[in-house]
Length: 466
Ligand code: UDP
Ligand code: G50
Image (cartoon, helix red, strand yellow):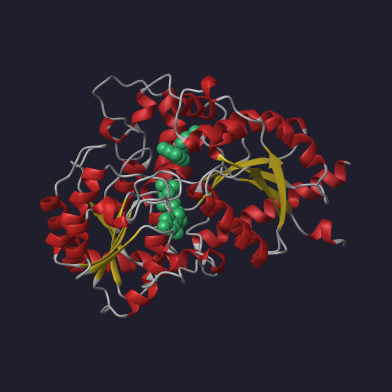
């Protein structure tokens, strides 16, 4: 049997931003380790420096994965109702989708399946269908968000109602991504268009696992309504953070890892709002005040620009010199890109103040680090609910979208979270469940093998009919 007959060959098409690229690269690594041939389609140019750097580390660490470039057509921003650089790039990829066809045809051996980002469904499906290519999405958020994504467009609910989805706990109106309630926004346009095309897919890959979202995974697989709206779901997470993500912060005087090495076990709270959430200056200062008041040791990543953060301003100017001087006694404040994987995996880190981007949630679960959820936008309140219900963390629901929270309250919540022994235990139990899920015979391991088996069959069928 030739290599092309014994292996599945899949192409992956991520969307823009670290929150989409990172899990796609982890998926690529996972598939490559499971004997799948992987071609990764890279859209050029990248939005952030962080993405370009991650890609170059990935390229040298996994040379068996083939990288091909897709050069995007320029996008006229006046034709799009958004100023968010990441959503503009999603739209640019969508408008360049027709360029995929010749690229796919040039790949050898022929593909068994195509795995695209969930923000690219409606423009890419016609391309893959015209080539009779089985098409899957990788949904880079929670299963709960997937249920919401599939169900919202068919739901009728009034201005004040919570959204009831059969089989899962209701989603309060206050948790709906604000941009979805603005019908002309680019986000709402893409969301509703893509959701209507969900049923055309052959399957959905998702970075989640049974114990993290038991109720929702059950409702999707067994429930009458959701099963009809969503193609087969493969819960194959949590994806293991990988070596190629290693960042060398070597030229700073005190690197986060060196500093963490000197702290007692389970004593540090790590504070980060992901790769693209910029905080208002006043809120940054309230967080600083809250950290002081918590009395805890902390590693705080400050970010006040949405793209990258190695901009001109020093952290002293953003936080304020006086406050920084006080903060230095009990913690480390940085604004460079850090390797979150190594931080969450460090023995001295016990808690995580997180915006609940889905990658951060799954990484915290993987390392058993308890979360204080503080969602900022998009899917993050829906994810925060998952965090709370699973026992991975706590969520102060009344901290609303974009509403300033005072230092006093932040400090109290951090202190409570760090002192909560039962929360610490339940987060650690979730870590054990995560490792069991991806281990031999675990639910995610079985789902992955089933998926790869299906891809191989699809491949055989294609050659049989050729
Ligand atoms: N991340 C990191 N270092 C940073 C900021 C973020 O390694 O300084 C990683 C984090 O571990 C996660 C991703 O970037 O894998 C961010 O994705 P997430 O879904 O948590 O949030 P987003 O940035 O998309 O809002
Ligand atoms: C903001 C963002 C990226 C992103 C999300 C944001 C999600 C994920 C769910 O809110 O909410 C999702 C969004 C759009 C879509 C399908 C699924 O078309 O910058 O992923």
